[in-house]
Image (cartoon, rainbow, N blue to C red):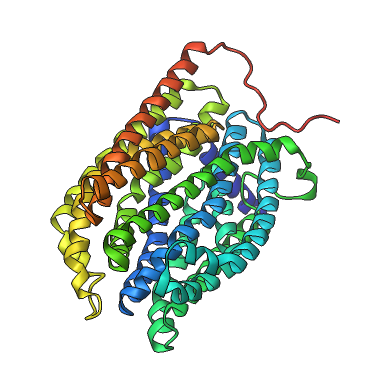
Length: 476
């Protein structure tokens, strides 16, 4: 029986490796769907927090809005580390270097433990001060209440992100999806119980998030370290301390993390502008509406995440034609889905907005949330170009280039246009919405053409030779 199980596991592993090193279009379609489902589930339980907390009034919803940028920064570090692991392991697989893949996976786990410990301590100590700097004002108590609980359970969230990245690198998207299903279902069930039945308010939403995220962490530990039916293996003999492996992971991981930081800084900037132009009510509208925007962005983000694996394997094998195909196909697929999503959101904006305005305390926000969503429909369509470009650069190990493109899009373009529309042109809070659309469009187009040009240069300069052993362990 054990022999049959081992043979079945080896067969599954071989199929996954063949898929990610084969036809890029087929691989992106196959890998992106489980990823999209997983991300929808992640957003579903985040959305559940907003929906249930909205019933506590605008201040409670605004408190989540102030926590969200900080949460994105911290989680961005975990997701960045996961992206670094995915990129390096996928490149090793493309270069047929299993020893390098194993060692990269173990280094990623060790880095996760250290990062989680440091971030937990820092966020718990400095959270109230950060919230005051952000202008939380009267909502600082509720925001601190929610944030300290969630950040106290950071290890579960970060480990799950990195472990998912390891599995994605070898083409296993289904098990991360299963973990997210368990997490989302549990969170959605216990959210109203903790918030209303037990009377814990915003603290109940935070505890529901931490408890449900621990389920995904437990499943990942079982699959990677107990069941051991993955391409990468974890044992003392597989681990060779190597600064180059650490640098390769961080070369993608840190810039990818910084991208989340930049986006969070943008969130803080936009919150400040919104407070000035419309008070905490404007922040509440943006917070509720942005949850829906993030849901709409899940398909292109899921496609982009799948592209990291496929493009990484193609780059490791020096199949630059496949790299070009991965860029163009993922962008086209993302734009097509986003266009459909935008049309749907535009016509059903009022119904979607009513989800966040079901209580007497928040009913008056519905028309403004609907208007926000109708403007954001234009943002949906152009975003896949920027996401795809960033994914390509992360896949080939050029995390810093991806970061530069994100800074250009988020800081240079969106921040400037938001300021111009809100203050210079006098549009007020709605000017922030148009700034996101116009600035985002400029940044995404620049990023896509940059990635396209870079790949063409790789193909022109390609000289046939033995592919380098990425992540190779130096011989003693």
